[in-house]
Length: 443
Image 1 (cartoon, one colour):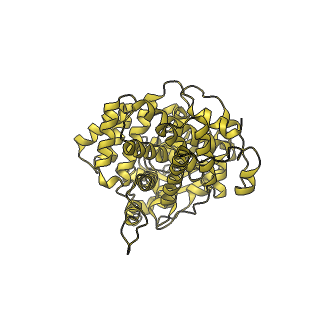
Image 2: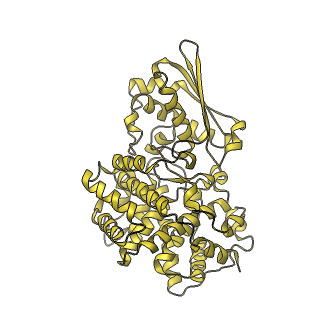
Image 3: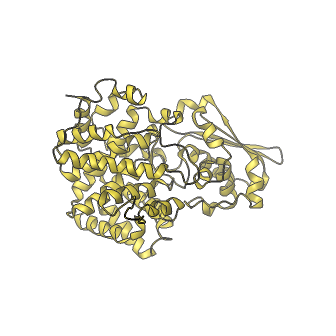
């Protein structure tokens, strides 16, 4: 058997009952989906559907909706993430599964759960196989690279593909991959490009269902090295299912932040519980060298740049903690307190912390106080990581913080109940899909 054929069998193999965790990640991603409709990126995405003279860049078919919805979720930076590969899987898998299940019109909770599990497996395994957490800093975005394969893997169970057809879909999806989406900045196309990558993966699954054959031997040689300059470790692709599968290793984000600064914010909030920001003369954050430069940047002009900037995040945590959940992330750099606190924050690399990465994304936070005292904390497992996973009640509270500003609170609660049950109850899945399709703002 080829690597892709074994990969297909691995992602379709039923893991131990992962439905409870799948339901929680479904709920979490749907919360991000609603919050994402408030961002400037969502407005740009909506503009693609505006008719030009006889032409629109985005239509109203299921594949077009997949593309828009993936972009809306991923733009939030409050969606889940697989740390070991630095891949934001739910942003791709959940919109694909929900959109296709609604389009097929025959809600089957068991098949829906299998689709979610297969998608999480496909993206996590491929991103591990290309060392996603490392190549990210070469400019290759692992989520973007693995999105076509993740979307194809998600679509396969919903379309009833067997393992051979799924291998064909994965092969065609791989042929549509691109790792470089460009940097962040004003009106960056990164998120909409990710949506198009997911759309391509769904197309690949539909093509396989209609009899197209992919090159199943694509990964047996050096194609990936020649075409993308990426070394492949096939072991993660073909490893047997273990326990609940990839879903058990995915982190929740407790607030809107790049994963690389989540532990730092977590640690800083711990220090804030012991003293006031006014008492701090300076704050030094050390992290693995791989991402010290990324989170240490001081650019705050763009929304995503403000989400990545640790100094800005610390200032919000100190003076506007209510905005840590806000995916819109307004620019408060002219606020006197925010502006005064940001220069106090220093980010430095610490090679000693590299031993934790990428299993975790650690940070040591040290505050020097005006009275000469020093307080410090080391966070290896941040809030939301598997070792400190958010509980169902915490995730429901997060969901309401994200969804309630978009839809009525009682409607949000009904949606939350349906999401948690949709992986095991056909009626709940039907209700969930109907509610999502009825909300035009969701793309």
